[in-house]
Length: 200
Image 1 (cartoon, rainbow, N blue to C red):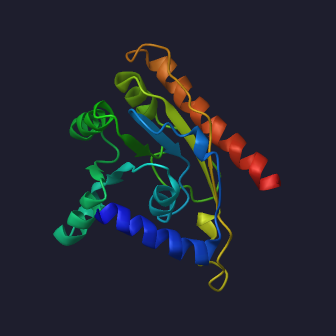
Image 2 (image 1 turned 45 degrees about the horizontal axis):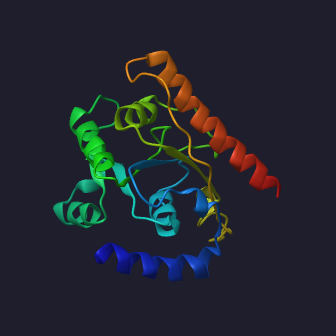
């Protein structure tokens, strides 16, 4: 209930501030486990994309965001769970696979961190590993404009969120080369969505 109420509030606030242009919501499967994989420009990304996803998103979030305890409780109530960056966090992987097994949507940022120059960068293999082990589709999602929020004297850009067509990993989950290749294909798709819509 808290998630639903907050989503409505955010839709009103973001609609007024950013007039977001949202495309491709029909590409998001409404049932079954799936991964929403997006480029990462700003801390605004998770709430903004989550607001315009047709279904709830459970995000992997860096563990630092869960302290103090009150902040952690709020974030957990929005389906987020902590992950240790820079290390193989087996607990987080187990939680992520559990979310997919329940038929829910997992939100990840394949680059592993925010882009400082606004461009897409090399993806880590984790997103492909989760797709392979969970046997779920990945919806590549392009975010445009969140890195410009509150820059240049409080400028509020018009944001864009584009959900691409689902992608499927067809290799084996222990094939490291195939996993790396699929993760990079996801980022290439996201980059292509950004370029096409930035020129529109």
